[in-house]
Image 1 (cartoon, rainbow, N blue to C red):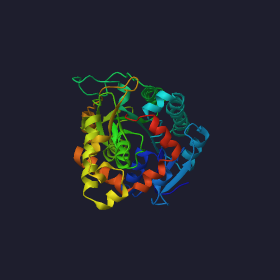
Image 2 (spheres, one colour):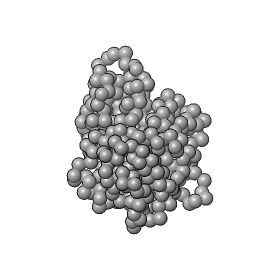
Image 3 (tube, helix red, strand yellow):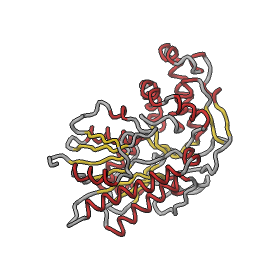
Image 4 (spheres, rainbow, N blue to C red):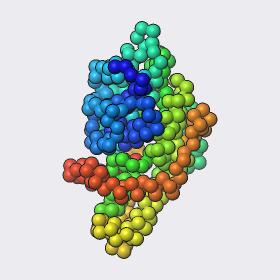
Length: 369
């Protein structure tokens, strides 16, 4: 296959961050075509890729652990850039079943690295980039007065999820230093925005408010996260592909540290305001407290904290600011307002991804990353 376009592969491109990245790349880079490889597990949704230009998007339903498939796709599409999002990423699920996280996050990443090494480094080699998307959770937990994580922090993962991501980070680093694979890694803070599966804190709370269901808060709700809008994250990854130095890590944050309880309160306030002022929304969501003149804060329910729950994450992204010219563009108000509006405007999408079996799991396994 040979044409004038640049061909990139995106693993996990039907998942939350992946689909936002694919949409952004196709919108901002008219000479790029994208090959999406996704296993379409519960969190992957092919409908999120609908209405994208068919001549520039090639979707493959497959597993990143299938090295033969990955090798074939790299060669057939002459891939020079691989952006690796595919991962099991929900901490609660990793506590219930760690095996899937080791299989996907460690074995899957290793499969991709092996295929990339074989294709890109055989013979005289070819210009390439393997970009690995990771998390701030690999650094462990911070105290309330500790400085934010930098790229020099020691890895201290505290959950099976973060441990599996730490393992994948180390493999990516090793393939650069041992074999010369041109890699970059970004460690991001908590993402939020459109197309996020309703098990993570923000979409879960939005959906539960609209349906009048309890808003489960782990412990005292004062676990602090740095909230990063997915569009800002995607901008940072693009910048890393353009300006990142091979072998380097870059922390990507949103400059938006907030406790979970404040996040839930803000969502309640925004939805109460919108539903209370709209007869159409009140009709669509009759179980929402605001539809009945009540406050959604009444739904807040404190539940037993989950095992090993990290108290605080915070990101120092000064390296990315200096080297990649990265700065988050979404503020707390703009990002959360836009996200609430997106879920109100896209009810068919989130209802479509929440089937009966998942709803049953969700109701018995409280979610708050």
